[in-house]
Length: 180
Length: 180
DNA sequence: GGAGTATCCTAACGATCGTTATTAAACTAT
DNA sequence: ATAGTTTAATAACGATCGTTAGGATACTCC
Image (cartoon, rainbow over all chains, first blue to last red; front, side, top):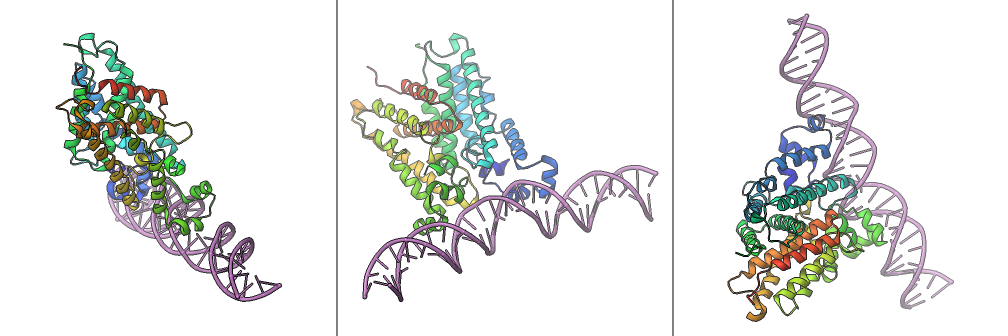
């Protein structure tokens, strides 16, 4: 998972995987099938671990708490000290050759699922905890996911964690709020 | 440029380039050097053409006009009808193998330049046309660039242009404003 | 018109890609 | 202890990668 995370699907050679996993190539093929199946397993592990920040944020009781949790924990995930920088689901196969088309579509589908999950949750808040009336949960959900993905791009570029937290805080102060 | 844009640096084989350029491989090598030099030329052309939306937005007279122009023209660029979806500078080499390390760093540097340009411009506005006092131009610049990069990721995933324009509009309504 | 030069493609290079056939080793069970 | 079965590694497979040598063609200038 860490190797795919750092190098992407196409950028990871089987030789790197054998080294990282401590298994020889035939063992990997016997256990997982082929490289694509192994990648999918890695993505599943990622989504259950470092990439679970979206699911975790959905439990927050108010819109503002949700957004705050989402953005800051996303920053921790994409700019963590002991993990590769960026997001596996974003940089795993964003643009790739024809041979990786299936993987690319798989990740795109996964990213899109996040948008619908978040939009559904934003719509589910009672009025007092939710968005001001008249705002568009779908657009806001997509905005937030886009921002998280952009933070992942920046983390992959080497932008330090503190700068990304500042971006998160900036976004939070920009949020549409109910008039007090 | 279009081929690199669609497939990324590693995902583009020389065979695709010879087909797209109508030149044989030796001609390409004679004219450009190697694949990396050709990619850099493609990026330069991209930055002078479809990727120039940031530079264009810097000419706007007010912060709000700048942001509006930036976001909407970015959407047009990354979700254009006659060009590949996404942004070459983002998806050209976001995560890649060791052989593409130089290209990856080159694009990261290019992305980071956008942040500093935008931050400088945001700071340069006279008070009446600028951000409300107390806001952080650096953080807002990075937020906007991150959002544009996130929009590029979503465009690469196949999200339709209208949805991305709605995100842009949502962000614009969220902007910190001077009290009227 | 013909020698010299530049141009461009065909073909092949070594390296590396993902994948697998073959073989050696280790464990289980009689 | 030994035969049978499973496990895993070595080595090699064809394909494709980026790159370049060699040769055929067209153009220039004496």
